[in-house]
Image 1 (cartoon, rainbow, N blue to C red):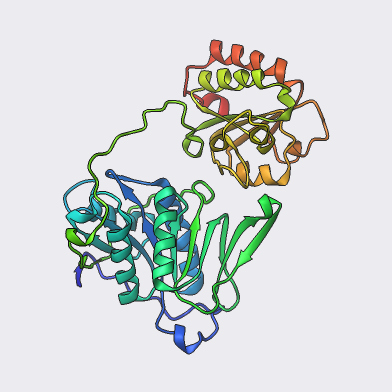
Image 2 (tube, one colour):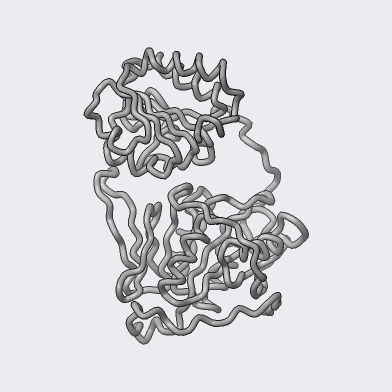
Length: 371
């Protein structure tokens, strides 16, 4: 292992006052780590969100925040460049594992790289995004390290003795459960995209980049990547990253009225979704579901048509910049947290909105409306 010092980061001045003395077997475990997901040269936004959240946890504990980057060697868009960029989002140092074997995600080499890195450096908290890649890797790493893993978290904190309090929905989203890993380290959690706020990028001196060698040969890896093909499906939901989301609930009345959502979403250059009951009815696929047990979203504009606004739905949308609710029931719970409320029949109001926006707004130009 070698260290590339860009600018040495000073160690934190001891544990935070809230931190009690750790059990002896855990005293070697320090720092908060965030796995930065890099695939096809792009950083997944959830990794940046987790750096912001990891910064808060590290400050409470009085320890360092580290970004962990695993990927291919090379220039821009590769692991080294991303490790360097992590400092702009709060990291004090970065751990870097580079190898041609890591050009594409495969469970075996990524698990080997991350478990070796954890075993050598002993972080107390390790966070990953609850993406397809992150879920696959986290489960494998936790199993290999024989530690606990809390999946699909919606909230993270540290309690009075410094233990990670990882909160996630349970019982179909009807309850929130806070889970602790008391007898193992590191404490691991995956967090859903768009649950945490995106931190601001800041210009600051870079920190230390610690390099670690992948001790593995291609012959030891069972899986091979022959080619990569995009699914090319324009109907695939992309709700977590849409600036505008239009969603419908039971108030739409009939499956054919879903077209009203799609028309308005297309006019605004956004995406469309639904509440859980429409998925249960089979009107929409599960990847369109918004709420605690579906997608968590943070768009600039969220329009909820015919959605009552139960707590499970609220958790999934309350990070939106502007929430507009349309419902015939003036006492619907959604009006308690919507920024703008319209007491009207969504079936007649949605076409009117579409007509107005078609005349007055260019697609994707929402600044005037959102302000």
